[in-house]
Image: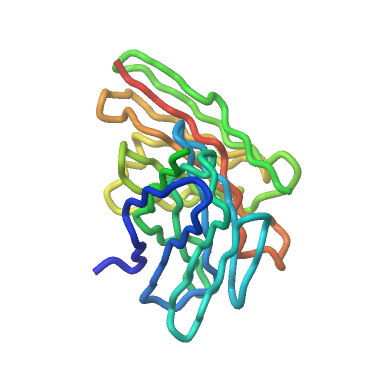
Length: 109
Length: 118
């Protein structure tokens, strides 16, 4: 079993829909990262969370440390949100990231 | 925010040649940089951890003589793919940790370098 699991693997939605991507992990962590990778490959760090909730524009990320679960939400989705969204965790006392497999999101106009 | 650059962004080379990829932190000092590779439709795989002024730590299965890493300064790490072969064709991404203790857990990612070996 992978230490970081994301769901769904693939998600196709219509423009304007509310999007939720989930991430569960099984190890002790000091932080959880949500990252975005567009076709062409460059990775952008969206959020780093250790507790609670963060919001940036139309993106919201939450984390429940007790349940070892995080969600990334996109409100009023747009075709330019189409990308792979990756969850990764930093283990306690260790900088290295453990990566989820990613969720490929396609937003249709 | 903190910016990490990579150069080149893409490179095509002949089999048997060596390719150097640079990773720079532009507005912060990074004691630790990481090198990842990504095959098509797969998640990133950590290759090595690079600490300024010391030898890199390679992940199991990564050949240190093939993937030479040098972290000579707090703003620059280089990855050299020696005697490249077509199976080395991949997307290589670096990330950097800021030096400040309060940001120990942050990583900032470079845009990646796409290597194609003919």
